[in-house]
Length: 236
Image (cartoon, rainbow, N blue to C red; front, side, top):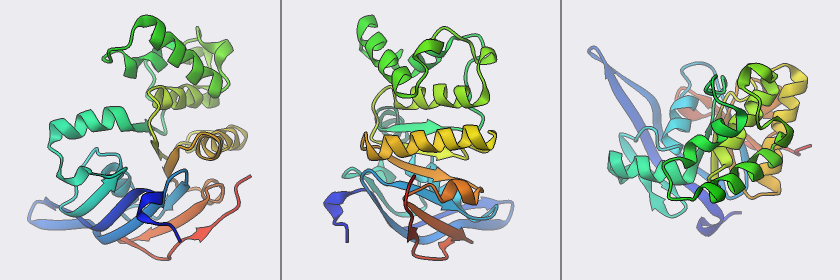
């Protein structure tokens, strides 16, 4: 049983609603969840189940209608938009299905992007970028542009970009959805390594049961609620 101090993420009675025309849509209703530090958590569910909404709330991209989202002791659900943007830039790494790399930039330059607005010197940025590329196994591809990389390598560059500022929380939206099985397994191995060996907390949305099975815990969302309490899985 984890304690509050063990949890990086604590979600308390969160509801998210929005209006479309005259209809009120509620993708999440009275949802609660604890995510321990260093856990690799998978969220699954059909389209419209609320999993991407939940991921965006955890990442600070959106705010709940009611309830609390506490991450590392900070209630981000009550932060202003400006403070939320600043918090997100320092504390969250976001990994997308389609990588979102800048085609004209090298791998090194893509990884550098989150650091350009920081107060780090050029040499400090270089140290962090090289460390991130080494961690994802792409030190020898630093000068390559996305068109010169495989899909799996592009996703590794995207992960390096997500971790270069050393956030404790990584959120991944279908990170293997555009990859073949071998490349997908490689990315899942990397996410597991980031959680187990580097203490990152990873929250991943996926439609793929094989990808979900690689997480430490899997939760199924149905109509804005968890359909089970989740189950522990052995990572490989």
